[in-house]
Length: 242
View 1 (cartoon, rainbow, N blue to C red):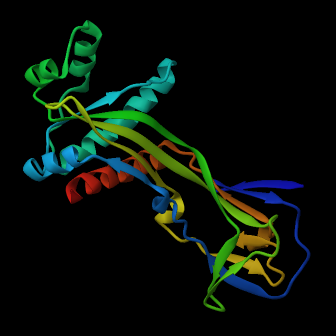
View 2 (cartoon, one colour):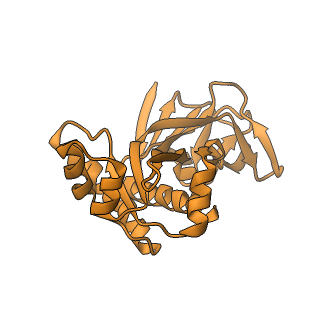
């Protein structure tokens, strides 16, 4: 087995046998179609009266280590920044955390002291899930086609945001959302597929060999912040559509 890492893309497999015919293909994931949206009529009614409610972000399960907590806090800052850019009023989440620590605080007290309409609890934000495709769009035949066997596939990391929205004035759950996105939702890198549909390689990297498996990993902080911003925009799009 051979392992190569080129520009953040991991290629894992045995070197293929030579095959003169190459197909040009690409893959577009549809992980967004697997979003899980559960919302209440009360949230819809509130958003119709207040299209851009005042919000505060709460992190219910922050990482334990200082390093991970700082990194996670940077992602939450990105979510807050997107809301501000979209014209929302974002309240100080540290103030909410201090109120919650003080105890004996109800939603009326939160409304009085912070003047917020919605609390958005970030339940989880991770980049470790994956999606696997055993088919590709063949640009030569203009058809979606399968690879030769289950051993040939393209695997891509998925960013997932899970959050819960609470209507402060009513002290009521407004919705629970799980939103997903992969790097392949944003771009369609081309690759070559051999004539047997058993081995593949990114265009421009085929000279290094063709392999049964291509992996696209979310590795850099820049990628993670960008994907976090897109997930925040998706959440805003939903709130705006109510």
